[in-house]
Image (cartoon, rainbow, N blue to C red; front, side):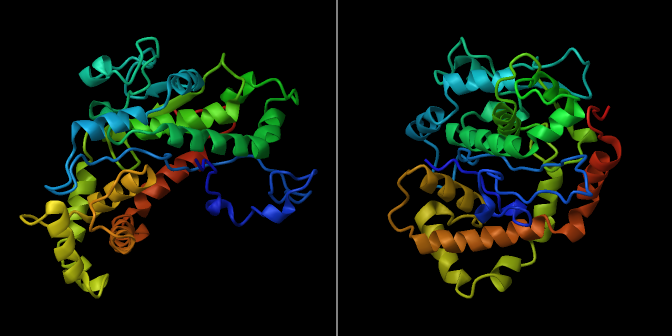
Amino acid sequence: MDITPSLSSHDHAFHPLLKSSSNDNGYLSLPEHMKLKKVILFTRHGDRSQISRTCGEKYKENDQLTEFWKSKLPSHETTLKLHNAARIINLELEPSDIDGESVSDFIKSSTALNHDVPNVYIGWDSINTPYGMLTELGSQQLQHLGISMRARYFDLLMQHNGTNDDDDDHSLSSSIYCRSTNMCRTILSLRSFLTGFLQSDTTTKPLIVRRHKLTETLYPQADGPCHKISQRREHLFSDNFIETKILSDYEVFEKKIKRVLGFENHPVNWLVVKEVLTCHTVHGIKLPEEITDEDIDKATIIAATMWGRLYNVSHTNMYIYLYYSLLINKTLVGQRIE
């Protein structure tokens, strides 16, 4: 099981050949005349189960598949760690309403979760469990990333808190501002990251801030399906973009996928095809016999092009800039956005 996080986003500073006894985290040190005052880290969620329950009429959800994904949820031990890593607060609710949202009937009755384990599935999509949820593998990936970032930034946080005591993790949480979309897999990923980053701190939990749809500045805007994303998809992908811009043999490939997966009566949802086939491949679920590695590569090309168009900076920079400006202008070490 490979839990090593990707550091591709840090390639400008990360140099594996620099690893040594004096610089074992592989990063270039700051020049002496410069001082690092703030770190802004954006990260995706870790490995997850498939979101879509159906990938064509011939490749649907079934009881065996549901039980399989239940078995991949974070373990009892991991769930306890994640619960202890942070608290959740919604800025539109009273401050006392932390970790206090209702749990879906599925979660309450799920045999995958022990009654002695605190509930950590508090995103709007908890009703879909175990679909679209962070897996044990995903949690370990983000914990590993947290450990990596701790090795790089621990001293910085200690300096801002006026201590160099390596055992004093208590003050770390007061210097961290955490933000997540209101989805289980992103909240759990952040909790996993904090588990690795804070390590021994079990007394003071950083607050993970999330917002409801009306004040959300991140995609997806979620207290349910994100209608803005749906509207954008409909607008962008209604001009034969896929057929004319992506694959030279698109029509032949589309006919095969329609026949094998069962999309005969409606258009192929390539984003669904890609995410389901990827999740099944990663977790060793047997694919339909006629689906080849080349087919998965083609579906990947189509989906990647669609996602690239969907999140094209020329259309979405207003959201990126708004959130980034909040971090730059209002978030200082030891302070939180109110």
